[in-house]
Image 1 (tube, rainbow, N blue to C red):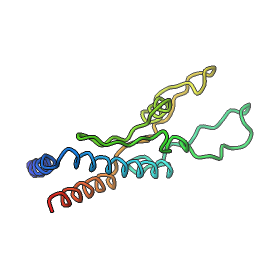
Image 2 (spheres, helix red, strand yellow):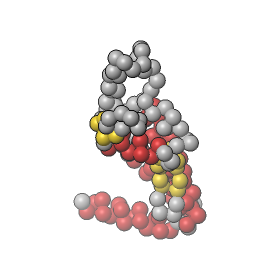
Image 3 (spheres, rainbow, N blue to C red):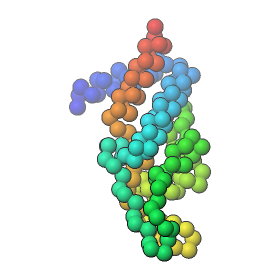
Image 4 (cartoon, rainbow, N blue to C red):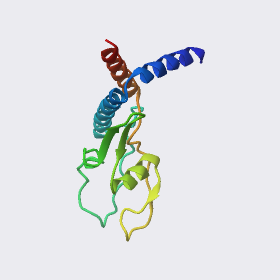
Length: 152
């Protein structure tokens, strides 16, 4: 635990040496890269740990004929609904607008009504946002790249 404390103190010192504008540029770049990696992962239908999403439930007989041929969350992963922004303190990737509620239901596996007239349905947890090992590595690389540019 002590070896990580020393590393965190050095990182805090490097971040403190960056100007607010440099921090904002760095967090904005990290947020954009995170959004791109999250979009690709959602397209692959995978959770942050690499496990596949739970399959869709079978539709009732009285519903549409044939199988559902489109992927889950195709519109949700677009830049229109998935926003990335960076501030002096944080890099943020979030869902905005009316899709926020739907994304939360799937992220946490909550109960929701598909439409106004139907009964509530318990959804499987399908983590849409999260950090995997490759995301953490990308954040570290971007951080050190910005710090090296700033101090050289």
